Amino acid sequence: MAINIQTRENMNARSMLAPESTGIAGLTLRPISLGSMELLRQVNNPLATGDTEVEIDSHTLAEFIWIHAAPLDEIMETVYDYPSQVGKKVTLFCMNISPTDISKVAASLAGDRAAVIAASARPLNEGNESPNAPTHP
Image: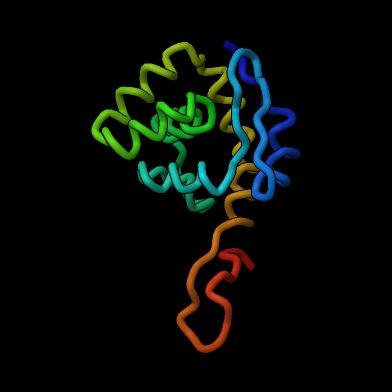
């Protein structure tokens, strides 16, 4: 299975307003959306923050791919109803993804992280400023 991620960076810029799906080499990879960010947070995936200091291991990438490519009904049921089964579902879904495909996904994460950072917000501790200030300068 090969994953072509060339168009995902362009789609991520639009994904916060109107998420759409794209067919990529046998998988449908959904772009980053607020919903997918929430799912990443629910499974404690470090890519949910857009932090550039996060070490990306194979488990982190497998969860990311599963959340963006597996059927949404399966993801929602597993994450919210059977959270102890997330690891099993992720592993089964990613069994046919090669190291080359993983490298392609990892290379595309710079654009994905930029989309996450752009959509992330953190509460401010002081005064009258908006609690939705971007987390990056």
